[in-house]
Length: 309
Ligand code: AMP
Image: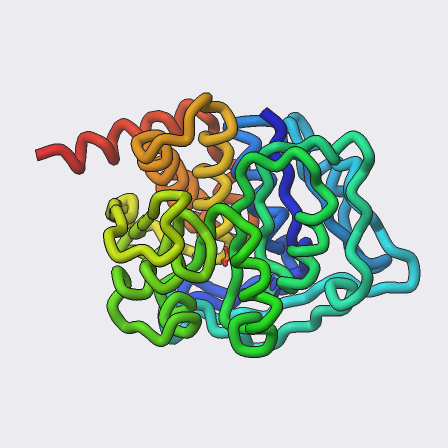
């Protein structure tokens, strides 16, 4: 089923205890597209500037990623982000963010993408996320990601977005900031009151919590929850893109399933967990590039075995 992603494509400078890389390929939509392509064909919509250093056709060579929605904008500069994990491997510290082309007009969604049924609104300005969503007419499942920057400076736009999507994926620090709740179950309940029918709160190496409510229950007191540990690994070189890869494994798997029952979403979360474990094993896309669907399935089985008692 058609899976569309829109979000940032950027050049990242990253510092982690394993080292530093400068101006490597990154961006929320880039990680998502690569990671989701292990599960299903992906339609990518994004914009880069004239200074973008590589051909994305080469980056995605051999992968089912349709780049018709990629725009290289003349006279604009690409989005750049400098992040550090030196203080805490579970949470990026933004040293510098140059929005550049992300602060300009949204890219066009190609005509042949307008029927997309599964949509991931990867991290970018929430007004842009809404704009993108409003142009798609057949959406069955819309999931968004966000981050502290938007919670702090574009809260109104973010709240409007939350009223329009099915699911929100965010990390525990962001959930705390958004809801002012320190307890993650309480935070999840508050997010569900803001609109989405499900929320996934990621807790870095400590795994993830999903909470959902009945579609017709907009003031949920009785929410359902599911928790999953992180994939047990000691190879953590660069956590950048873990969240996007988690969402990609989840949405990629969901887009191949007929029903969206809680048990399907639980399996989807396990795939998200596993894909993220490959992303963090190296800098930029290198961890994902070095893996195969077979290896993903193997880790999925290992995670399942590790959890049964
Ligand atoms: P993640 O680690 O999955 O949360 O996402 C990491 C990616 O998000 C990096 O490759 C960055 O380029 C990108 N990113 C960082 N800050 C922003 C922002 N304000 N808007 C959009 N993308 C961002």
